[in-house]
Length: 114
Image 1 (cartoon, rainbow, N blue to C red):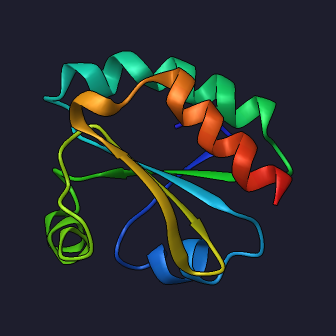
Image 2: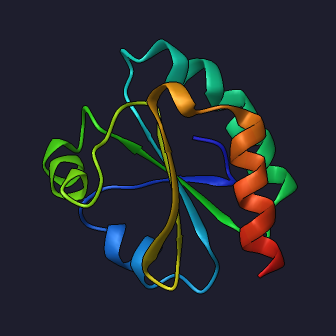
């Protein structure tokens, strides 16, 4: 993981996401999801661009199945999936085929300008 992107798991999810001071973008991914791995360098670039304004986290769903299943009760997870949290609440989501870097950056700009 890059310095601007921290790895999530069941032990740090609540503290790093739900109790975070800044908005948090969570990248739900899996090693067998080609689109997920293709997007990773662009996500890391966004993490650098928005450093200090938005926290970036990655959740490997293959290593954290139970947490991914619990979270999928909030909204269906189709990889890749990106959720933006603010104040412990899910503010916006992009999943599966609807994911583009452009749409993701639009959502980030909205969150930062609020």
